[in-house]
Image (cartoon, rainbow, N blue to C red; front, side, top):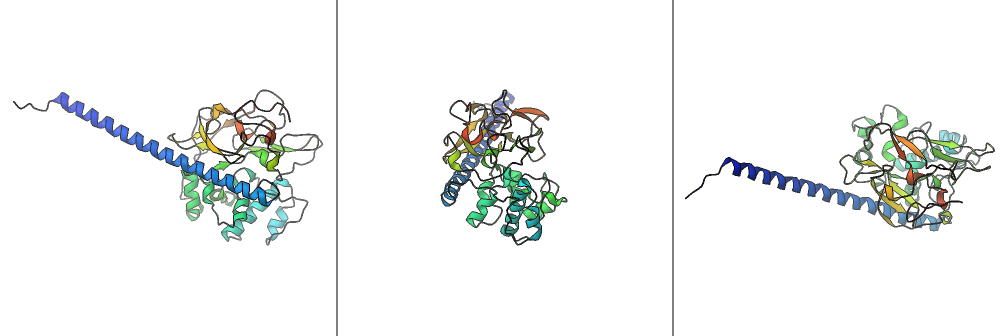
Length: 337
């Protein structure tokens, strides 16, 4: 005897189909996330290889801006030469814009004001070292979709067509498509700690704000010139890291949150994913021997990983205790210089 297809059977069938669809969607998302994370780790390994090559060619020096305000610079642009004479920070900014102008063939590219270029733009030195055009793809994470869109279509960025984005009506913001998804810790271009004669750079109130701190004697900090051989624990010291967990999270997780799983590049060239809570907390280079660890406030812009406004977070490996002489993973942080 033939049986009809009852309502209950139909409901079960719909539920089964819905569940299968959910499994397919989730699995596909996980595969995309895994692939994207793999690409990001590959980017970091490339950066590690370039770092090793650069160090071999330049007496173990870490790549980064090297211009000094007291030393005349060689640039074809008069405004660049003038800007480089002010202080260590503006000298670095002048060098960054000189690189952008030469590598994009845009001689009118403006020099931003009040800018710390070392954090997300030091890789411009590597572009020049390799003779590469900008933007430079290994420095843009496949998961950082906003920055990827900006770097792939600079003209649309300048026309304010790639929202969310910084306001391109302000020429100070034209630099954004040439930045990196991967952050360089300040110890690689500033002193490990403030001393009587050495200034440094430290975290300001917000997560995206930094400040230069003069030495105890009032002298300005020098920027750049660090050596890879100054790193005491190459396998345990973070060289670069993705600024957020873009893979496996719907909208991303800022790297300082304890549950973030972030791709890291170590100084020895190895790369892997670490949960932030498994890494050592960060410390203020102005007071490296003090407790407690340094924290900041995360107030994301529209193009950054979202979070509750005003969330307090530890800085972790952005500021390692005792800088290049410290340790970020695999053991207790350094207790002294």
